[in-house]
Amino acid sequence: MPYKVKDISLAPQGEKKIRWVQEHMPVLERIKKEFIEEKPFRGITVASCLHLEPKTINLGLTLMAGGAEVAMTGCNPLSTQDDATAAGAEMGLNMYGWRGENNEEYYENIHRVLDHEPDILIDDGADMIFLVHRERRELLENIRGACEETTTGIHRLKAMAADGALEFPVMAVNDAYTKYLFDNRYGTGQSTFDSIMGTTNMLIAGKTVVVCGYGWCGRGIAMRADGLGANVIVTEVDPIRALEARMDGFRVMKVSEAVKHADILITATGNTDVVAADEFREMKDGCIMANSGHFNVEINRQDLERLSKDVKKVKEDIEAFIMPDGRKIYLLAEGRLVNLASERGQGHPAEIMDMSFAMQALSARHLLEEKMDPGVYRAHDEIDMTVARMKLDAMGIEIDELTDKQIRYLENWEEGT
Image (cartoon, rainbow, N blue to C red; front, side, top):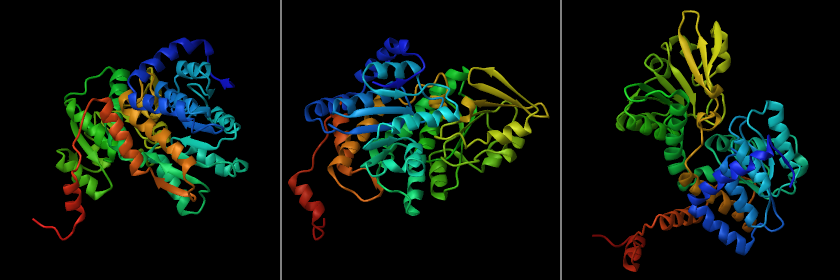
């Protein structure tokens, strides 16, 4: 199989990691067994642009078990784990990517994946989908559809669809209940603090943690910060989410005020310039900043560099920006998504990604089974419920079912008390 990875000799180390996560992804393993028997992707090429780490490689292996030729590259220059990509290549996947790619290499690797002339795309952030529409339009005729993994990507794709620019159907896997209720909340919450604590080796208890954004990712981060003993402040632009944060027990204020209190600030909005020049001028000495959004645009690094008199790398994945008045502001993982871009970042737990990648695999199969017009489609409830039931079964949990009488009662509007 073609591949371009940093060091193929790392494959045995990466394979151990992949085998470990497979033991903790029972839903995906069950789907893999079904795919081996049914071969739904026979003759199909699947191209993915995802964070290249053991759990993602397991998704690739599941699709390959279903008969697909699979080509994979990374969706972030710092989130690739080189031992995992080496193992993926050795296990039969077409792997292109390594940790620390520059911008040119990043897009070259997406093009290498697209050179396999895919039928289905699986994306995280929509860079690959956007590149097909902008530079590789010769591939559009062959593409049956795509699956998108993350909130940021869905925002981009809905904007494309609104402009009439999206030319094939996209399954919004991010909008599935078994994705955002668990991956975005419990996955992001835990993995963000796993990475921050591993990178800084600092205590969270007693510190003031500012969480910018109270979507499902922000909710998870705030919840974990609270559980670790932090004083939590939430910033929001949505009045309903702001009310929810307050009634969840957190202080709510504008970013400009919150930064004055922040010991640790974490962005999770999917938007740009959440923290920029005005906020850096007000930020307290020693504040640690991290981003859990997909792209490195939420914390304006250019403003931070412009305002600083010096920048020093003080530790792996920690930069100190020294202000003219002597204040130090710390930035983790270059402002990229900290739970994967940091050396200590492992991404979401395997038990969480089990559901998300099960949704990806089944949604990709759905694209082959149903012809859809171009647009962004929420992942089907039937698939969502299937994944949830499979997860409960894997956990040994049984739940009740409605009786026929209960079903009739719910469906009959004339029935009262």
